[in-house]
Image (tube, rainbow, N blue to C red; front, side):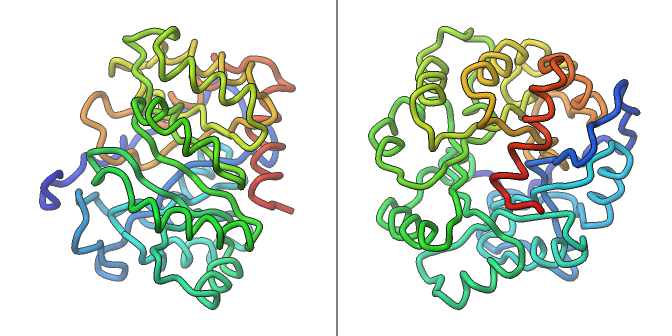
Length: 293
């Protein structure tokens, strides 16, 4: 586990102006708020400590890039204390929805509070550097409660998890979203087993969704991350009605080349040049999944 006292790099403070304008009602379907720690402390058992990236930073970035909507994903550094996320959603006047992290102790009242606060999903981290797989008994109990709420589940996986969790994925009975293209490694090519299985999952399972973001995590690690393009294009082609995209601002745990958020928008336009597909990716799909009205 990472030393929690070892801080993450801050995001690029100077995003470039995207070369093309975003369509109206575009949604950044994967972003975070961190702190400020003085008001929203980080979890004592966290695996990393990020620089503060509060609501005001996220709002300013979205105004600059042209996003009218966003989905704030609870990150592991805040643990199951979703207060910072809920505060940001409340301040946004309907602009943002949320994805929470919960544990087995969540009760009906707690879920109702999250739902009223704009939460539409729960997230489970499986990746090794964030602590590895959750308690699967808790996983299934929480998913039963998610089904009752009409929510979905977001899965943060390592590439090999796609191979090892085939039976688990087949048993999920609520919509599920796989983060960051399954964190496959571009250097291993589109024929690698995890990506072949991910493509098959997207073609065959109507409950499966995927975020075609996280290019900086898929790439060998150098801007502009174009080696991630074939993976994003293949996933969009496989299930254009079940793909999402987001910035991942403020990019926690980047150990390679820190992305520029304007550059990531330009990359998205390069791998999704078709206007109709881009409308699905940025507007229609997140509006449907996250209940934007």
